[in-house]
Length: 268
Image 1 (cartoon, rainbow, N blue to C red):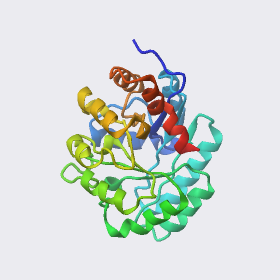
Image 2 (tube, rainbow, N blue to C red):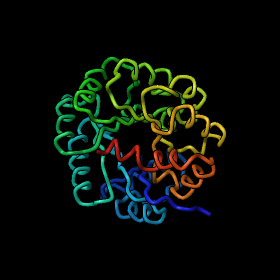
Image 3 (cartoon, one colour):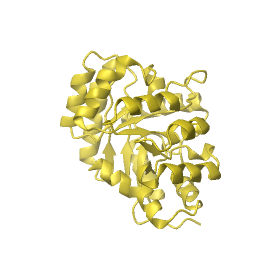
Image 4 (tube, one colour):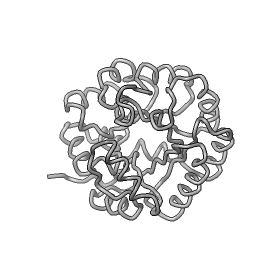
């Protein structure tokens, strides 16, 4: 039986405009072979938060094409203004000629950070062509969340392996990096070797693929003050993810940091 925290912030969720949510979820479900817990709409995302007794969520849009970034960020800003329990990151596409300018607009729109997905945006995390984007993100003080580790859309190539993520972390020490999926989805040994203890945040989304023993070791060795609770909704179930963390018998102070205190600090 789950006993609920007073405050929980899900730092990694996905939702889409109503007119494209159904077909987007259908496509992603086919790629991932995973059954979603929502239909991808904002309405069902908020219902999922309530079902799981989660206080607030952070939506992570992804500009999968250069032409999408402006509309995606406008939508994210609208959602953030409309719903008090949702925060939104923005996104830029590395191939967009105005990616740098759009980062400034993300800041002006008061979006909370930048989501980059190397697999869907077709780049390797340590490519020098990304450096101007990283430099601008650092300058603007925006957190950046990367998908790291494996992804079913590109099963034969890891675009953000832990060793390369560590290089980016070292090269841009002022950039606030969040490495999703504990630093490497289904590649946790590499994450432990190269990322644990680095100056970056790890989120707990898809931790169901990590053994409880390894999950607890990663949290304790990295430090709970740099771990963010996340579900990757609609691909993760909040109730299960809350139970998974509570079963590790972490201290209350560590759980509070993971469930909401670290998120509040990053969200300002």
